[in-house]
Length: 489
Image (tube, rainbow, N blue to C red; front, side, top):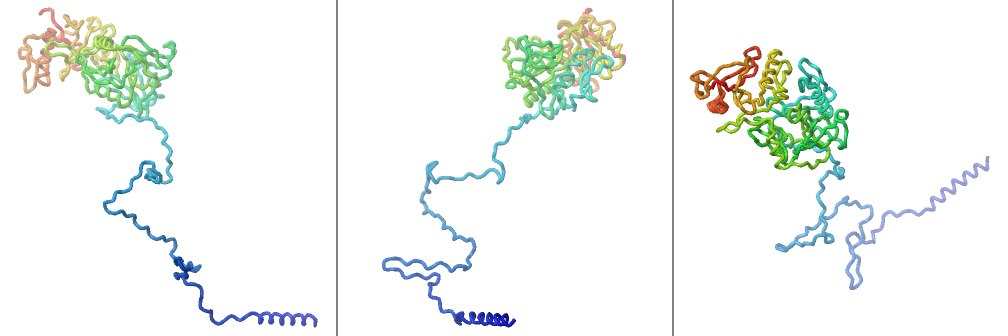
């Protein structure tokens, strides 16, 4: 125990001795003897003075400030230095056109949208789905339906109805558009606002009944085999030369080598169809039925490459001569109204919606309301009379008449007797502030203007008409009115 106490005392004594052995710090520091900032060192003889030592470490300075750049000024009037293109150092960075972080890769290709070319008229559209297209047998014929809409009545032509339905299913449109004032002359489908597309690689041979393969009809009358389609004829369209033109008194849509569509006196319809062809790029026109008796004509886009087809002015002249619809040629007037060529053996009575009509293909000659017997009797009368042309004058009167080989018929059917008049005594005058064509003061036709009345008088005298006739619908409205040249004069 005594030894431990002795060792502890010895440690305390040694610690005190070591502390006392350290030097005592001075009360004040001597003045600094090194050069102060900004001073200069004495330079040897013949040498410039060097700057003083740098700032003492840890002395605070303004963070990150650089001295301003002196402007690079040239003397007034001195030309600016120029460098040749591509000279070293002559690099001017271009202004970025994209925001930071935006990809500069080229944009992926997108589908071409329809042209912004405006149409002269608003499109008459029907919303539809290809899966809803159906063919129905109704009283008086066959109809093509899309949902709750009747798209086409083909009369007794079941094959035509099924071909129309097949076309619509093939094109898969979401909208169906018709062009024509009183009846559709041409139609087309849009799929979500874009033109309906059809076409497969051409085939060499396939039975049309089994494979539904159509053909291309060209100006020479020959046919070219096309891909699968329900159309019996497909016509190529030259978009570069498509235009509207008056031909023999009717408004037609044509290209350089072919007459594509005949709108009769409907100039607005022809302009609408031509504009739609250009707007949507339709390069084909299909025909269900025959070109002379089409059930439906429609426009579409084909993916097939265009084929060279014979044509030229000679073939175009042949098409003009074969027009089934022209103006009525009147001496001293030119063309007026429209004249449709008929095959009397194919005139029929059929149901069109809720009423009966007498028609030749798509051309409705007269409406007979719910009276089926009157319609069938009128159709039989026209067949027996062998009428070959049906004419309708423009204007408010709606005067219609038949011709036989472009001459006035000389016998009125017994069931259609009308009133006689003297063509030499016809004149235009006002009765009770209304214009009328009169015979010895008796009104024969009421007209909207003196000009319309004068045209009617010229027509009566040109063909020698002197009797009216009417195939009645059983009431005061409907039926078919026409004119006859009596054999007594």
